[in-house]
Length: 458
Image 1 (tube, rainbow, N blue to C red):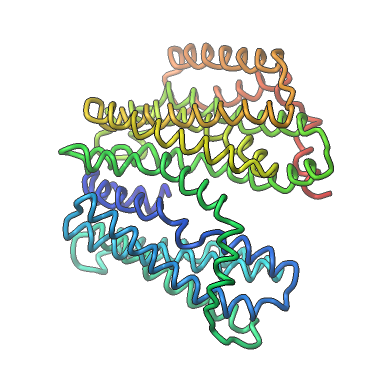
Image 2 (tube, rainbow, N blue to C red):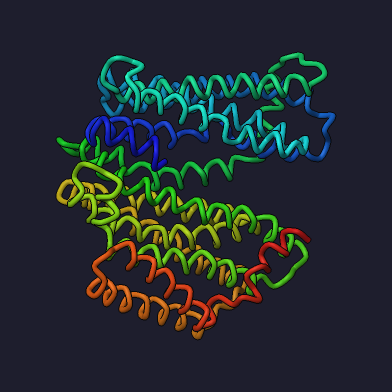
């Protein structure tokens, strides 16, 4: 993300990367059509009964190819509606293939993890990205190609990497499958989709208000591609930060599911996990506010002044995305998908309206404001619904301590920014104070830090 992806943007420029990023966002936005919950269904089924591997493999592979055709038609149709140029379509075609290969790799890996071949799956989980790093490193930092690097090379490098990875993983699954007889029973495919469509709709709606900003920017503005490139600079950092919350949420789903099934009070676990993601999220947002220009200049070559403004706004979304991962996971474990889908739909409408109002005047900065506003609404609404449905008890005293943490850290960061000239030293001091304040205010307690891990291992 910060090596190859950032390196590509610095090499080709904000406008060229913006062209790619807006098309990538569209292809990711509709990615759920490629899977429709099949991967999770298959993983669960194979884990419960290894003997089903051959039967499921024979039926799901044709289904995946069928869904890929539907996905391609919808994405290309959307491109026609948006009025994409010939060059945009030529890149979009390859991105469609890339998304199919990625989805196919995830499905193939679900068979391997379902067989409990975790070491093999760990290696395969990074294989495609490792190949992208190797290929793009040669293209970016050597003269092996003999011509100037273009954004198309980056897209083709991904295609090559995903193709090689999928062939390797397919071969491993094939060895484990005793007998394959490809078939396409519509009833079987429809039954899977019926079971998983609420999840699919939720993922689609959430993808919309998290990914469609760049499409709006590219379509609504004369310099749209440049603005998307500027927006992508900040989004890349936000996306990297979100990995922390994703890891925590991944552990929480089985914990919450078990606790709710056994009718246990989830308040303490919600408070603990909420604190674990919120403390670093607030710290990062405060650091990014005071050192936004330093961070952006360290990473990028173009438009660093304006981009730092966009970044200082957009990174606040990390706080609300982190909150969403906690309460969204809790509501998902409770089976409250209808409430989540209605809420996500309202958030999409809010995001569209705000983008249409703000982008024409404020460009990438307006899109950042729209994103944070949408994410904050979605997060706070999930928190309120969780408290009402599941009777989560979050006391006023707890929120007062969080407020004091924010106040103390903000004032400290302001003084550090004034007094310490070296921004890296200042940033490290803020992180140290964040830990001190969080423990002193008893938002985090040492005796509870391993509780979330112990709950998963039991």
